[in-house]
Length: 372
Ligand code: PMP
Image 1 (tube, rainbow, N blue to C red):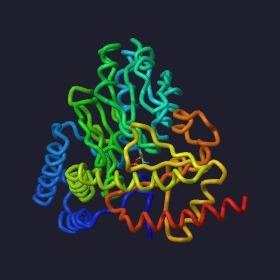
Image 2: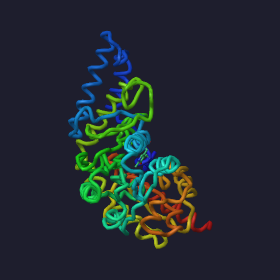
Image 3: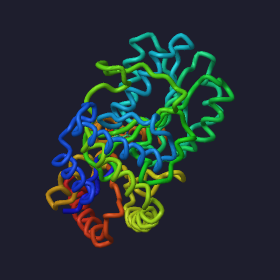
Image 4: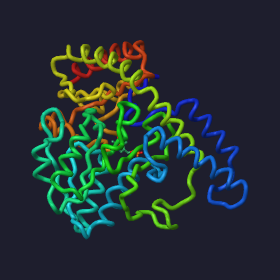
């Protein structure tokens, strides 16, 4: 099998899976129970949280565990909007967000909030002037994805936050860092709220995290106890997540240079196909390689590759079948936005894998061209 859909999800690393199984077997107590089994679990929970706080250079009380990035995005944006609606009712978002952010915005629009979409330039970078104009006295929160999930555009969050604060000192910046963490270095002090997901960093599915600056108040979206996220903490998933995070963050630079070489090779190869457009900007990270087939339906190619045990992604796993809003925002070309596929590269991808992909791609693509 050649797996090239790492931005949709990643396989759990061996070490992480081992700790998931070990904690599941050996820590039966509920961390909230008073007895010694509960205390033992609570101690492990605290040490995992401490480890995460050290890795991300934040405080332990700034970590809220969630089921994944979708829930973290919901808690961040809805939780902030409901808590601070007395200050203003405007939310500003980019046009390069994950579909979950737009779902949240659509919901908030039904609750009396206004949503403003900020423009980007041809490189996918947020247009600073437009951001300046769109952040008003009514704006309470701006949400900008750290690394876009389709074209991999990385945003200069620190600068963006400075622009936002200059316009309105009360407006805060949330960033969906799901595709950034483990691929590039991130600094949580550049933002006020940030979302993460375990299954994008070789961790288990069903665990994520929201970073919340300790000065920021949120309204819970899941009610039950007095915390911001009610429910028994999933100790095995949390411990496994902390391990995945440590591995992901430790090897960023080493892995990035491997992936860059793979990307260079793929770019040079695909550039030889005259009808295919490479969707890569000056700010795309090398892990996500996106192309538009233009004359062939992406699903036909994806399924043909699948028959050869090769797995690539459509625009994003969460927006299957829909026109890519990211590609529209960058290239404003409907055909380009309708025919994209995403080939994700990882430090686990070998040059041999890539050669096999390139070989099969050529056969499959040319056959589909003939069949048109
Ligand atoms: N944000 C981004 C940028 C993503 O790529 C994804 C996963 N496709 C999500 C959020 C959703 O993450 P989860 O599956 O953990 O809810």
